[in-house]
Image 1 (cartoon, rainbow, N blue to C red):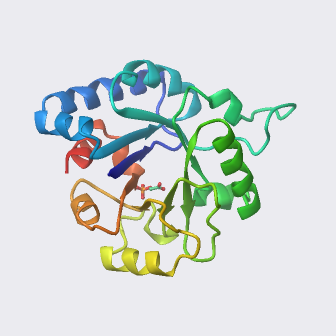
Image 2 (cartoon, rainbow, N blue to C red):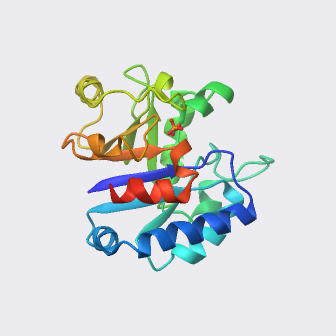
Length: 222
Ligand code: PGA
């Protein structure tokens, strides 16, 4: 199974979201091999838009094997936390959540402890977690479902890390056990096959290239 995950970050609006979904699905539909892929369980496609667009995405992809994910969730269970979106609120709406992205660790000072708490809250609410780590210094929470290795220098820079270096990193990670291990950082339609062809790498997390529905469709079908 290969996971192909779109992380839209803080982009898009209601209209561009609708256009994205339409173009993405029609790009998929024109490729019959691809629908075979997706429905055979060989590939899991997870799209993570900003919170406000989850519902419209969910309504459209409901009967497909494309899953909705959030880009984060609250470290609190419920209560007076203005602006937060909890795992409880997201339960039933998303199948996955990205946790501990390096941008959240950097801009919002998220710690390994907060990330572990979020992972537990997600598990309690039947949300699978895609926990991002920057390298060996970030802890892998016991409850994490998928581990995304994203070296900071590779994110949004056009300097994707080589498959060999990604595999080397995998060997050094403590606590990975048998969790699926994916790579993120400047993945494009041009380089994605190198990662997907490696038996040691279980998929990719895609930022910039996922904003263009046609290029994301190419990544999914690579
Ligand atoms: P990028 O982002 O594909 O734009 O490098 C990846 C990520 O930050 O998840």
